[in-house]
Length: 250
Image 1 (cartoon, rainbow, N blue to C red):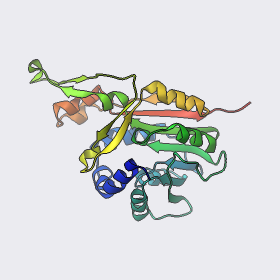
Image 2 (cartoon, rainbow, N blue to C red):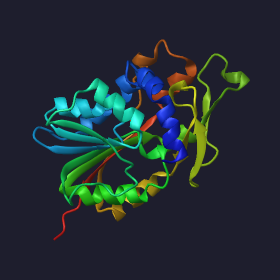
Image 3 (cartoon, one colour):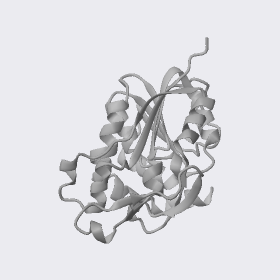
Image 4 (cartoon, rainbow, N blue to C red):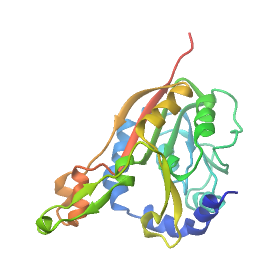
C-alpha cells in the first residue's frame, strides 16, 4: 500500500461526509455533466475504476447497469458497502487499478473513472488495463480536476477589489505533484498535474479514440451568492471530462 492510499484511508469517512452529502460543485457541475455523457446503461456491465465510497456506482446501478466498483482504499470500499448493499447488480472490491485487474479481456461494456487519475502515479498501467477489459466499441468516461484549475491561483490586484479577481497560471506543460487538502479535509493527499495531451496519449496507446471533451462551467445564476473567487468558475472550469470509445480491430 503506497503512502497516498494510506492518506485516503485516513480521511475516508471525513471525505465521505464532506463530498457525497451535498457538495455544491459535484451536485451542480460535475454530476450533471457526467450524466449527460453516459450512454444508455440498461443491462450494460460497467466497471467503476476508483469508485471511492460508491456513490456514482449506485447512480449507474439505478440507471440499469450491472456495476463492479473497485478502489485501492479499503476504508472507502467499506463505506461503499455500508451505504449501498451489494447485489447481483452492484459489487465492490478493494483493488489498486495500477495492478492487473482480475477480469477477462473485453469483460465490460464500459468503464467510468470519476475524479481518480489525478490522485496517483503512474497511470500508464491503469489505462492499459482499462483498455484490455473494455469491449470493442465500449465506452470509457473519466473526470479529473481540470489541469488549469489545479495549477492556477486566485490573485487580486487593488484595481479588482470590487470586481472578480484573476486566475494566474504559472506552468502547464510539465507534469508535477503537490499536496492537496481535498474538500478541506484534515490530512493532505498528493495530486498530480498532467497536461491534456498526456491523457490523450494514454488513451490512444490503450486503444481508445476520444469522442467528447467537456469542460463544464457554472451558470452565473448559480453563483449569485458565492464568493468572487468562486464566481470565476463561470469561466474557469474546475473539472475536465473525457469520453472515449474502444477502437474496433479490423
